Length: 169
Image (cartoon, rainbow, N blue to C red; front, side, top):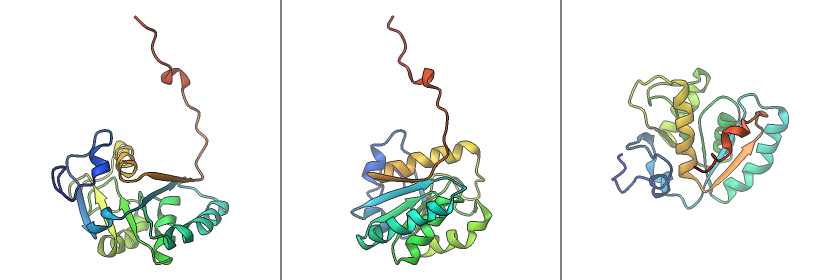
């Protein structure tokens, strides 16, 4: 679908650098759900992170909220699997072409979601993931949802000088 198609998500159109087009497999109607929630986090979760997901997602699914995540290792795939096990719906946004699975251990999950749920990508068929693809994928996830749930993330030192406004001229 292209950015001018009626199915293209309105919020994504209004986001920073929306993709001109999206490739998809699965149930495109999931994009029209009333509520979508992004669930993201570390690729190396602790047992506590899974406990948090188990405590929070049942209510989310009961309220018919569609979970959006990146089909990555860790929290992303855990949130997709738990949502599906609870009878909910999930959208996976990937940083590869639709015919490529990364990470490989999520092949069955991605195939299931492409058939019964929804998998989105801005990359053409057979495109292998590059580092920057996964950063670009994150802007799509953010552009689809109004709410973001972060379940455990690594502490990162930010370069605060980079964030300071430049001196007036």
